[in-house]
Amino acid sequence: MKILRSVGTMAAVFVLAFSISLYSFRAARGSDHQDSPTVVANPLADITDVFAFPNPNDASRVALVMDVRPLIPAGMYGGIGLDPNVLYQFKIANTGVTSNSFKENLVLQFTADTTGSSQKITLYGPAIPNEVGTANTLVSKTGSFAFGKVSSLKHGIKVFVGPRRDPFYFDLAQFFKIIPDRNYMNHPHVPPATADSFRFASRKQEIILNGVDYGTAGSNKCKIAKPQDYLADYDVLSIVIEMPKSMLAPASGSAGIIALWATTGTPDGHAE
Image 1 (cartoon, one colour):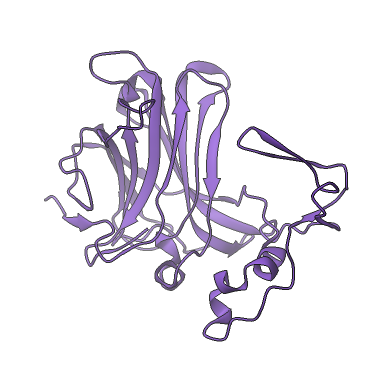
Image 2 (image 1 turned 135 degrees about the vertical axis):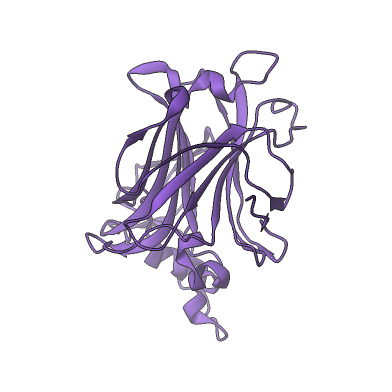
């Protein structure tokens, strides 16, 4: 039975998209945690990070990672699994990326059969999506595997879904001092900002964003103090798939630049 899932018709609050070269050895990534009341209410639908990187031991293979369920206290993930009411998807465009005229033409979908860490996960795709947009039905099934175990499926696909340490470094306390309204606990009475920059350990620390050099922390009059990684003691649930790069190539050509984003969605329209 195909299940209709609405991805974003009511609460599309976060879609992470970026372009990567399937020939490149530079990883692409992005991060976001607890970005709306919707995902605070259901953290199993909260996408915290999306990564894409080649296998360092085999240049013909690529790994995609979606992390969900932020702020699990380290080691206290017993009984936590994916939400069986949520459809987890990697969406991919492998044509038109360089001209910024791309559309989704491949999808990888994950579902869980029950709650808790004894669940079975099923992978669908990669395949051409049945629908492009906010409502999605399941594509062809590739295989099922146990939560918490690295598994091999057909077509040279390896998968893993389970707890891992949160890989993102974030000085959250300082961020909330810069932008207090992003802390949902401050609402409805949001205090004024008490800081204007992140904390940097050294005045000489370089600030480079998207390849652009903005000088040093000192030259930008940033706060010089020891930063604190708020996420150091927390875990996430990682959805990992490694496959041949050729599986993400367009039908008429070889693997090249792709656009990649991830979504979570439920039948009632709540989504990230």
